[in-house]
Amino acid sequence: MISQCCKNHGVRYPSPERSWKEDGLTDANYDLLLSLLKKLSSSTLAEQKEAARALRSLTKRLPSFRAYFSESIESIPQLLTPLTEPEIDPDLHQDLITTLMNLSTHETNKQIVAETPMAIPILLDALRSGRMETKSNAAVTLSTLSSLNSNKSLIGKADALKPLIDVLEEGQSLAMKDVASTI
Image (tube, rainbow, N blue to C red; front, side, top):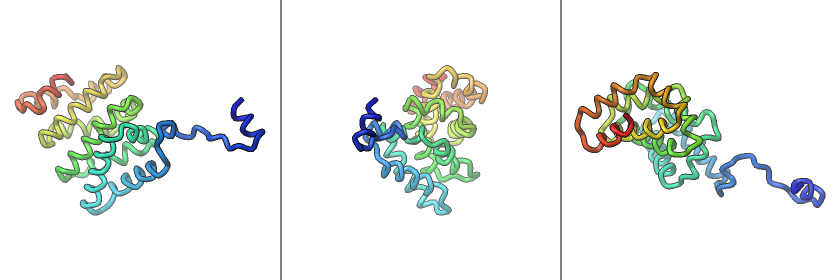
């Protein structure tokens, strides 16, 4: 009814193209996300690290920025692709796992992240080979993802228990609480 009234009076009625626009987010911010994701595929480590650091910061500081990731089917795979390389810079690894942790706190992203085929294996790899903070953040991410019942079976099928127990047995206090919570 409102849209018809606007049409009859020559007023442009905004279409609800993206749910994040309701939160005051802009196309410029969405373009920033796309630009940062593109930088992650750069051949230079410096550009990748800069983009990862920015994404980590934005997803931590601006909860509404997390909503962008649910709008683009390719955003999570683009975020994770650098983590599929055989040699990964520890800082880049930590920033990307932390970004994934930040994203997983957004309700809509929980299912999207867990259903991205490479996500859970990458988190398990971070538990096995990351720095302690990276391991802790991977455990938090798995715990957050497991808050959805549909994700519990995905995590269980990926054999997440062994890497979690291994981190718990390392005895580092930073990760122990997060890992215990996940288990």
